[in-house]
Amino acid sequence: MNPVATPFFFYLLAAIAILSALGVVAARNPVHSALSLVFTLLSIAGFYLMLYAPFVAGVQIILYIGGIMVLFLFVIMLVNIERAEQEHRFNSQRHVAVIAALVVAAMFIYSYTHANSMAIFPQRGHLVFHPEQAAAMETNNTQAIGSMLYGQYMLPFEIASLLLLVAIVGAVVMSKKRI
Amino acid sequence: MISRFIDYVAGYLKSGVTPGEAGNALWALIYIVLIFTGVSIAVIAMNWLERKILAHMQVRLGPMRVGPHGLLQPIADALKLLIKEDIVPDRADKLVFWLAPVAIVITSFLVFVVIPFGPQHAVTDMNIGLLFMLGISSMSVFGIIMAGWASGSSYPLMGALRSSAQMVSYEIAMGLAVVSAVLMTSLGSSASGTLSMIGIVQSQQEQGVWFIFKFFPFGLVAFFIFAVAMVAETNRAPFDLAEAESELVAGFHTEYSGFRWSLFFLAEYAAMIAVSSIAVTLWLGGWMRPFASFHGPEVRIPLFWNHAGTAADPSGAIDLAFAIFPAALFFLLGAIAALGTLRMPKHRIFRVQTIGLGLFALTLGGIGLLLLAPPVRDRIQDIFWFCFKVSAFMYLYIWYRGTFPRYRFDQLMKLGWKFMIPTAIGVLVGTAAWGLTAVYFHG
Image (cartoon, rainbow over all chains, first blue to last red; front, side):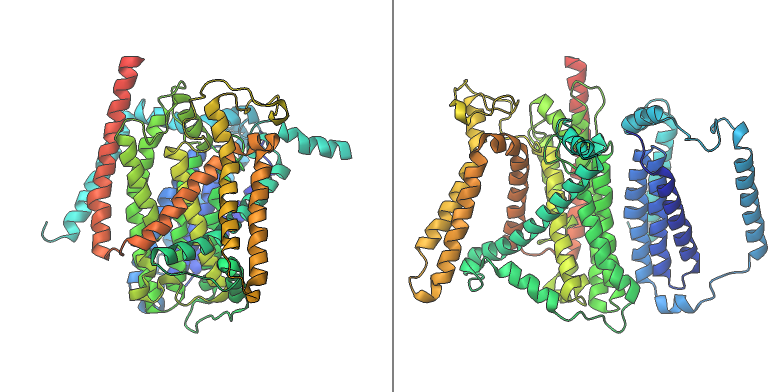
């Protein structure tokens, strides 16, 4: 099955992602910031779907939106919002921020103008993946990730899970005086 | 032009796949509209049934005034909610207050995209179907948090806090239980398992066993964990701490009224139907009838009653018995309604109600007759069995509400973290070990 109206959805999702990302930094109320972050993450999940990576999109929704953002909101609701609203929102790291933004912009411009020479974009303006190739990727995406994680990349995967376990134990130790 | 359109519409019917897979936008739209109306009607029916069943459990009559046996009560309720004043509290955050019911309705209805009512009766079948359903239903907590916070009042905020803590905790047990069912799908002829909702049911069909009975007792325990966690996920009794009316007035929707409140109501029941269909798909064989691999001795049915040429034609005695079941169920319901008609008081005040109930009985009987017609009988089977299993879960929800006392918050957390999650991990490990030995010894 060929993708339908791809450029339209790309620009729609991009617009949502950028506008809600601006909302995250511009909103005075932390809850509004968190809710706009939800929309940013949702549109990024949409991008993953468009890149034929449905598993990553699903995990993005479950982990980032269903898990992390719920905890964010949970904490924000517990702290005193009235005081947080009066505080000065932007600290004075302006020079660093400007330099970082310029570097990122230069990277984008370079990769756009030199897209022809890069291996992943065979022809600029064309689909990154051929439809047939993409359909095969979409139908086996989850299975492929599974066999890769538990086959080729078994050791890094287990090390990462060990790291998470250490983080959980550390959080419990720090929050509880007596165990 | 017209013939091309007819080809476009009729071409799908022969394809035998979901509209999403066939890439047919028109049929996808038809399915979406059908499912949306179906779910809305189910919610209305559920509203009436819940009040009646709860009342009978408490030896009361329940709604009796609007229509015979209160049958028109949901319509009266809906009218009341629509014309009620819509109040926005002064201290509310207007935008989020407006967004919360919309968000919760969208998330609860979005999951119906992948629910398989039959081998080809779903809007679409995704490779990540199950993941999609869990993800979207985990997002429904946002509607509750937004509503609770935006109301600018203490009771809703408490309800929202409780709800978010509860949902995050029970999601873990739910996910682990689901993973053990997904593991079982990998034991079929295809070497790798699947997350697609249709694929999961087909895997049960191929292995000839519902996953609730597979690897006894692991399948059963996983199903039990999911069945408890799904009640907690939908904030229903006995886990309805988010809206505990004896402590928090009405919890997260205290400040809502009129139409917005009815959106919360609609979303809650739609979410209940959605999680029940996940349970039915994963453990209870989805659209398959009970004893789907038994056909019984061959029987000869009269030619006029035989819908020749379709694979679904009942050929065995057991097939035939189950094929007649939907019609028999509607005849039974019609007979109950007819009995009620006969037992109506003979006073002339009740004349309109008696006629109404009689017509209702006739309608039910008519549906039963329609379900006997061979083309309908063969096409309705999978949808009927799916809906039948889901309605059993709906009855369980009402039953829980009528019998269990509400948990205290610390009890809820203790149950979730100290019992459900360890048990779910144990079941997962057990299922994996058993599955591996099965593969190792039997190829």
